[in-house]
Length: 388
Ligand SMILES: *Cc1c(COP(=O)(O)O)cnc(C)c1O
Image (cartoon, rainbow, N blue to C red; front, side, top):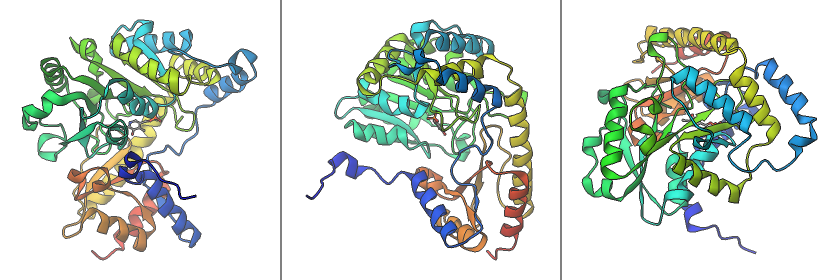
């Protein structure tokens, strides 16, 4: 039998990071000594106290049942406490919903709010799910370029009013993947104004809120601003903060009616997060945060090493203030994909082409700081030998 995929599925490009992973495996099979700075997946293990909690929680039969609903009360209480301490924002339990990783919530959200032909405002370059989930729900993505001259913030004045009238959701992601930009409170105020005026739901993706380098650049939450809870929600993830990408746990919080919509979709799709993982999430959020301090220190060392090394070779690249990425301009005369191919073929280095995450990413590549310092040193040594 010939299998016919849906038109919507056929419209989706291959998932970028799966493609990059494929390329890595091919090179490995050929015996190339690969240094992978491609996919943003932490190399360090989940802190031991979190793993230990999980080991115990797995053996409790209470956790073997369907989880359902918004998530365990104690998980949501731990989130509310963490949020209060971290951002000075109070959350009620019905303003929080546990997610099977924030990607799951970001992808499912559209089903709760998008009708055929509705517009979703999506930053580009950006995380692919904002737009692919739009296509899967018959919505229309409208791309907002993130340009260096605007500090990688979208310029709302460039969005035509006819688009704003049709728009239902606006996605925003700071600290930003892939540009490493952070947003200030003035930007969020402007965003809330835009949302109120045009009846657009704000979906802020804060997956990297804890991956920053200096106290003075500590990212704020969109929910800290007056009026935010009237218009939107914020997605959070334990993946990057606690090296838990494989565990699949995060949450969404904010406007309770939006949360209820997302929870209703989830009740019909996935029945919630394995409770043992939620228990581990409680421990992650409510125990000592020493491991997160240590993690920041490690990324900072790697960041300084890579950025200083690239700058010495005359690459145009700035020291990022947040995220574990480095967003580098490609050498003059090269495109993003030329650069990616040259780095792979001549140095065995994998990185992400900027244009793979949106047209405005052309002219950049993204390096992930998810390998140790000696590998970064080796990568620099190899890059230095390339003739451009
Ligand atoms: C990693 C990442 C996420 C999602 O992570 P989960 O593991 O699904 O929680 C969300 N947004 C961005 C921009 C990311 O880079």
